[in-house]
Image (tube, rainbow over all chains, first blue to last red; front, side, top):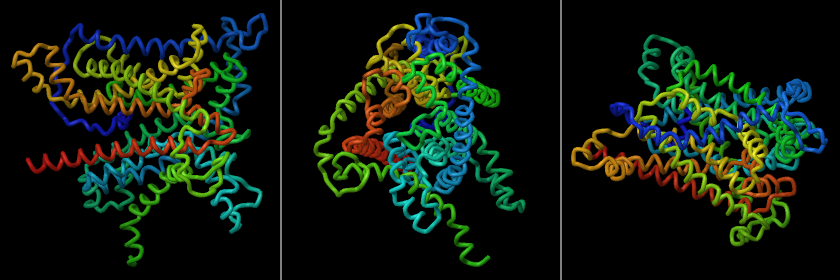
Amino acid sequence: MAFGAFGGGATAVAVEPAVRRRSPIALFLLLPGILYLALFFLAPLFSLILTSLQQPSLTGDIGAYETAFRWENYTTVIAQYGEHILRSFLYAAIATIAALLFSYPLAYFIGVKLRAFPLVQALALTLVIAPFFISFLLRTLAWKQILSDDGFLVTSLKAVSLMAPDAHITGEPIAVIFGLTYNFIPFMTLPIYTSLEKLDLRYVEAGNDLYASPARTFFAITLPLSAPGVVSGMLLTFIPAAGDYVNASRDFLGSTETPMIGNVIEANFLVLQNYPAAAALSIVLMATILILVAVYVKRSGTEDLI
Amino acid sequence: MNPVTRWFGTYALWIYSAIAFIFLLIPIAYTIAFSFNDSRRSNIAWRGFTLDNWLGICDAQGVCEAFGNSIVVGLSATVLATVLGTMIAIALVRFRFPFRNATTLLLFLPMATPEVVLGAGLAAEFLTAGVQKGALTVILAHTMFCISFVVVTVRARVASLDPALEEAGRDLYASPSQVFVRVTLPLLMPGIIAAALLSFALSFDDFIITNFNSGAYVTFPKFVYTAAARGIPAEANVIASAVFFIAIIFVVVSQLSAAARRKRLALQG
């Protein structure tokens, strides 16, 4: 899985693998970490399921709930927040496609054109991940200022009448989708780069030799060979984009017109103290993502997951 | 084909990539530039160049405390996650054990789960268990999502380790623990360091999971989020810029030294 693309560029040199043996040492090595994940990853998911089925406590206090099996919590949140759920997946899908269109040529340039210059290639990769080194929230706020009504971009567009005088960018869906795209571009570029970097150019030459047009060569050879990277990149972009609530937040690139599922979960959990609603929405989001992941796992097998 | 189209055809990808790199760097340049802004209360309009923000980082209320908290959380989560993750990585590559696929899936899922679900889940668990939110809950949460990334990073290093080197140690009558400490661990060190840096970076910039589990404890991203409603002090830009420079210098130096090493090896070969 190209999640490993974030492993600091530790490209594994192929060595004859050591024979895996059985030993009690394995248990000693695995147990602490596995228990940790059971306690702080699996148990919380279980806890979310329990919380999502709770009913308000009889005392009627705000934020007080008791254990129950109130399945209607799910139908309630889907009816109440269906619009937000759909909006999240729509925004995330558009951002994923935009990031793919942006990243593919760039990844091709770094992975194929710069192959002859390893140092330049490494520095170009650094530029791609550079946005990760500056605070996520501050870089999103920077876009908010750049795209604001008083900003250079909007004032110039309005001056040449390319934008209506009363139009905005920030607060509109386009700004939220733009923010999601920008913030997760490295997640798309790196895995595609990892696939293209290994692309054997002799296949492309063979295509050219057989008089295929450049377009045909690309669609018949280059793109299929880089498909694993494209699929990983799409998952890695879609997942955080669908659950994000910073870009769509009113104080960042969104407005009251753009809340996504993450904003609703945050508001219900941390402000309204409506824990069952927040938990039910989290489970809905998680279930959708798990379906996507399951398709991916089925295709790639568990051994290559990490 | 006329020469202009041909020239464009040859260099289109170069031109596109140059524009793409500039685009990626725009908000970074903006954030750094506004760390030098002579801002009074809100750091939105440019009012002139000053070094005051850099010289008095802690002048803005709460910035330095939040930064310090982020460092404490980052270091603690990094140490915990690196130890736990490295142990798992070694086990995955070197040993046969039952439930191998289930283990791989358990390590993969936290990376594939939206942060808001991880955050809400932990918060629900802490709520049910009656645990008070604070520094400890943030550290526990950060360690959780860092472990998988450590495993991925260190695993690649373990897999590329030549078993002959450890055999040589054993042949020279080193005990298993001596082989581990004197041979295996030093060889794994670059992977472990990379994993630790990645963990620290992930922890330091995490906002979503932190927001659900921090209670009144303020980390740097949480400070920025809260301040966003009323205006970010320029000192926050200073801290973000300084962190950016340190990270970039670190990465570039390590790349340059890797390039120098490749060159040396090529010369020897």
